[in-house]
Length: 252
Ligand code: ADP
Ligand code: MG
Image 1 (cartoon, rainbow, N blue to C red):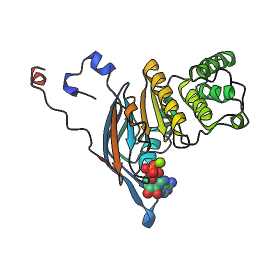
Image 2 (image 1 turned 120 degrees about the vertical axis):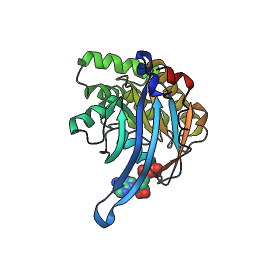
Image 3 (image 1 turned 90 degrees about the horizontal axis):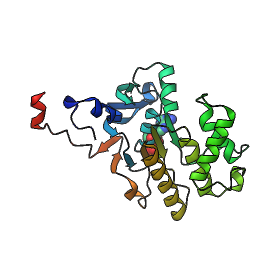
């Protein structure tokens, strides 16, 4: 949690919130079909936090994640990712935001014509900063970390649901993103695989110092979060309490 901006020092800035949302509204459609799906969202997520976002279907969770990831353009309010404002931002800025986040979706979204290794290499391709051999080495390393060192040349159709989701995790994390957005990553998995997948994400995130925001309905994994937030009808319920103004602030 961000603890009082008025006492910001260099070290405080280094640990500042990586996701900051203020009074964010969002509307789908135009004219008569215009429909508001997000209402005055306020949320701050600190570096290294693992936050679970839960709530009924249709409450706006995926919409919020897609705005954070630069997949949709936010219309009003404020949405800062790694200190960059996305409301009113140029397209290039949104593209940059998209690249700085790792994504894990409910359906793993792997390319069926590519091997596990090639799928993970795709996670580095958008960055264009690594040679092919570097990409391959990093992909192989990441696949071992998620326990698939023996399956690197398999195609998605020859992997189980849990294994495919682990490939998706490897692809999302191979570029060491500062933020990982995961939308119901365990929805298609049985209990054991779902738990494994989340524990792998959690471990890698802690090792890489990244922040995770994960949408889930799966109450078997709620204990993996540092914090749980709840959305209903486009609103966050139990938003973070206002920051208490500590007496120390007065001396600055
Ligand atoms: P959740 O992920 O919590 O299930 P969503 O963010 O997918 O919720 O959806 C929130 C609301 O926005 C729902 O009422 C849904 O019908 C609507 N919605 C989602 N995507 C679109 C879209 N592309 N066009 C119009 N309405 C949409
Ligand atoms: Mg959803």
